[in-house]
Image (cartoon, rainbow, N blue to C red; front, top):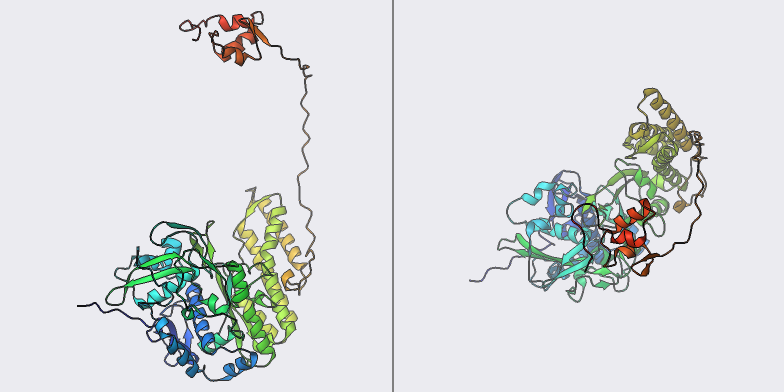
Length: 587
């Protein structure tokens, strides 16, 4: 009796966590329902009402974008505007396309399984190691907690499908097992582990997909991984060019293969290094992924710090393709003036060798209404406000570094400024730009001063001295931040390279004069004469001590020549030692 081959179609089986807006419930749907009913669903990163995990959200959104863009994505702004104003996405084109590739979107297909490498037949890894918590060890916080690795029983197919996407996108570097034995060295980080991600959020999945999909025709040779005409090469570490965003959103950075049991649950899997982009991960992400943020032509936007809810404001004016796309849609009047544009920024931190995921910082805030973003002056004020807040930690570090009584100042993260940022946006929308910016700058300055007082470590424990140092630091921080112009921008956003404030003269203790030590006249150097002994000349006492006729050690010869100048070199080497057993000449 043959064992039935399990099947798990990613089109119809539930595996994408969403919130159904018609019923208000959280559940999981297949790829077809997620796109055809996108106007009635909201994408979440877990199957319940918990806070979405940034990495899971990022990979799910990219797969949905790749499927929709390949099926019915807008090629120009006219098509995008038509899709935005339509009540739903084009269900006929989406269904036709997905049904065409249904055989490549089955998680357990015997040939070309979804997001996996065909031809792998050995499954050395047990299923708990597929869980993304494994990337950060049992202390990982970013995929649901450490206890998931200890759950008994095989892994359900829905979780396994999401874990495969996360492993391909965020896997750590280091040594990987080779196919058929051996090892592969120097594996790269996953394609989503390097850049900073910036996405626009919306109430419905339909609006979220369109806001994060700048219109563009399909590039030559660009296709998602399920459209590849040939199977993935079973050569760990092979390189290949990235033709476009469809390929990059589904890039097979790891070669994986799941082993299901007769009930369709995963019991083991294969895991090897996969394809590497020919131009490098950062270059490929910069060229083909609009859901990334950059602080100039070659550098990613720095990862957000803890509690930096204002951080996403720096996405304005040129560092994020999706924000530029939303701004243009607002300027063209396609977005409703009252639509609130919200931004989510996330990043991933690894250890020194990029072999363990150490943190997943994230921030979210509102950029205001579409009417606000349609005005260039308002966008510039928001970007300047975010830049001012980013300058506060630098001001603290600079002032503390110049002060002689401060040892160090750690954890330079401003406190949560969510309320202050929301008040700034409300003030700009109400037409009170100057007052709103003044209140924002005052709030950031007070937060910076309070942070410096709590984090700095002084050289003295005397309360009066500590109070004096705190007063001096507060004055210098306020002077530094007050000198930053209200509309100053970073250099990569058009700012001018100017010193924001002159550094205060550091307080240095006057040097204490020290008396110079009396020096004695050095004896003139005399030429060394060879030592005459045993009828020969020796260049040094060490050479004499190595002669077989010498009966004492090298230190003894030195001591005798120094303390008994009347001895000749031969006598110093031939007189037996006075302590211990008499020495005989060396053979």
